[in-house]
Image (tube, rainbow, N blue to C red):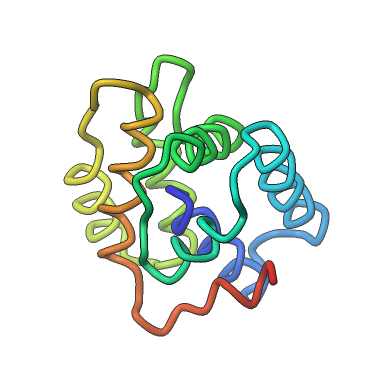
Amino acid sequence: MSYLVVLSVIVAAVSGQLLTPDEVEKLKSYHASCLKETGIDESLVKKAMTGEYTDDPKFKDHLLCCHKKIGFQNDAGDINEEAIIKKVSMVFKNEEVVKLAVQKCSKKQATPSETAYEFAKCMHAFAPKDLDIVSMFY
């Protein structure tokens, strides 16, 4: 969402009942599937949830995997700004701020995985400081 975005959407959606329990489980299954698919060290994911992004190829692939499963990126690595704005605006309510953040962060990089990584890092800077996404998954 980027990763943080996706997870923050889950947390806020659950607390605000924007997503059904089935939808939350689907998002959790995407995360689990991508963990298995990429073979990432899960500690890297936990670090990212707190804002510490590790420059690791498996972590970048994990982000891309999650982004593709939820429709935030396609196979070519293009960011689906419209989908992200729609989903994130449901949670944070200020569509103009969300649009600005997504537009600022949607810069295509050399590879799809690198795009996912840079997008995630950039979007993290816009997340509320008190957002506790770690406890949602761990």
